[in-house]
Image (cartoon, rainbow, N blue to C red; front, side):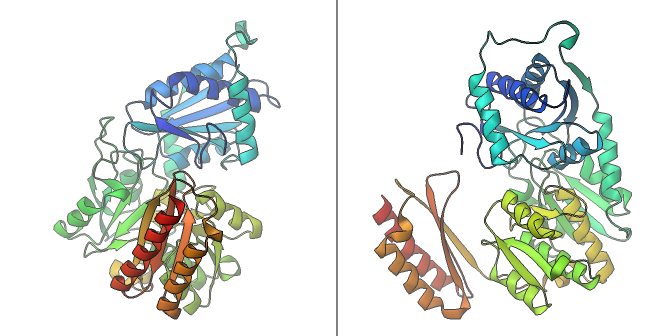
Length: 446
């Protein structure tokens, strides 16, 4: 991992870690890189609703124009809209200004190639080198070689039309609640669901710049759960700040996570003989219940490392069509190059409509076993795999669980943490096992 790029672009507190100066250099670097093979490369930019978004957008635009690029500014749009429109417009790259589910003081800048896929580590490393090489006296284009900026929020309609075309059933007769998290889905999601015939009750769709993800959206489900029950809705959908993921609740207000949504969609595709090699791609963090449900239906689960880019890599390697994470970040390869929360919701709702069942009945195809995760802050994340005391504690925990559960210990990719997770049918047993392992990890790793 480089100095600027993390697991999902460049992130930090806006105007402190992620400054306008850095945004300018990133815009200049991207244009310089993508301009190697294109005269006046086209780069599209979208952002979420954070107060810092317009500041960073302006700096990015200035950097791109300073290097001779052409900017198409979309305004506030979901992350997957940028990925989709980059391909439709034959752009050389797309940029999203968002920190996803993080609180509003944070922001981020992430890049997509012109084909709609996130950049590889190698390309991000090259961008980073360009950023570090930038100097104020660097040669820049002048006159008519300076870049241009055009504003096209109207292009959002193309993305909305595309979403509607991804399902072949209408939602007439369904009553739903959608939580837009005061984020990038606030214009798109209600329009799409209503166009397909659903009765839609919308909450948290009044962004102020400082209320994105504030006790709402897919990281804070209580409001949605209550709204579904109060309005006697058939189900609810919660999006995150940049709308690249979603979670759901059933008619009783019970949570339906990404694992359950993937099982619902995988089984629907299996019935249609559309699930390539009968295989779903999930991560090591997915619940045991997912594996059991897919196996019972005659399917296979391919396991990827945690992170949507690793899920996508596994899907591309063998042309699998469906994969995702428990967080609700799901990729439908037939329709999209990245996770898309509204698209995911549409596929789940379509499966619901075709099944003739209630959402709770549909979700019941997967038993969600209790999971307990403890984050242990440590001085050193290295070497724990060879530590005898930690190994013994894990082995003892696995012996206690036998075939009824599992234990997963892994370091965080972004923080100074080691995560200890266990799952199985007995929560009290999980607590005892996880707390013991976590204590030993803390003792041994500082």
